[in-house]
Length: 197
Image (cartoon, rainbow, N blue to C red):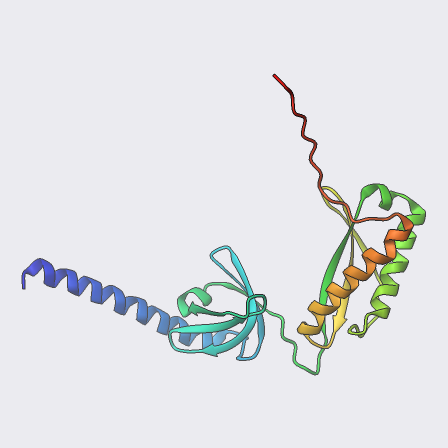
């Protein structure tokens, strides 16, 4: 075997071992100093992509997350997860889960004082009537966006799974409640002019 081939084999083996050792070291650091445990619901940002799911396994080389949207197992090397932004959304079953909703309304409707009061009242009614919510809405915040006004409020439930369903239920209920008042969710439109040559 020539010296060049031996050198190449040694370089490849060194690279593989280096990656493995790096993952093991990051795995030890992650286990010792992270505030997440198996069963926690986490949101993690890796290389610009957000993943949300349940942490199901932690090994010396990688962690496994069960993705909420696709139900797929996402395997993340420890060297990646140890250097990533992690948001732990699990509060324990004895605590409640809270999520913020931004409900979009056109500037024209939001500027109308009567319609604005109707929107706030219907938001509170929708949250009260939702079978999964456990707390009423006390405060509704208003944020200005590029093409709409966002009426922002919290949805509180027992679990994160209930929270996803509750947010969807409240959004749909609000659309139906506000339609009779001629209040609709704004959407982008495009005008196209075709000229014959």
